[in-house]
Length: 85
Image 1 (tube, rainbow, N blue to C red):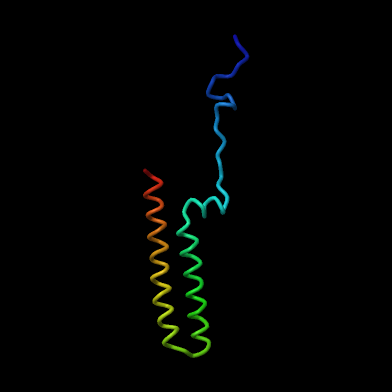
Image 2: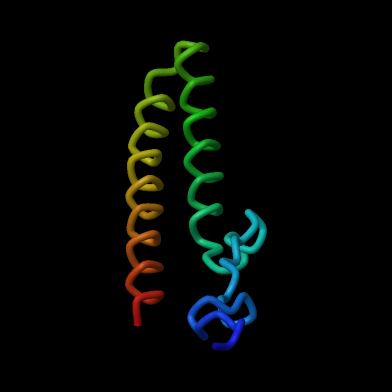
C-alpha cells in the first residue's frame, strides 16, 4: 500500500480562497462607492439645511438622497447580474 493520500486531499490541488480587499472591490464595482459618497454628501447638506431652518433645501436634499440611494441599489443589482454571467 502506498503512503500517499488520495488526490482529493493533496494540498497543492486545493485552491485557496482569495479574499478581495476594499480597494479591489471598489475597482471591480466603482459605482457603489460613488453612490455611497453621493448619498452621504446629500444627506449632510440636507441635515445642515435642517439645522439652519431652510425647509426648502432640506426637502430637496432628502429627495435627492432617495434618488441617490435608489441608483446605488440599482448599480449593486446590475453588478450582481453582470458577475453571474
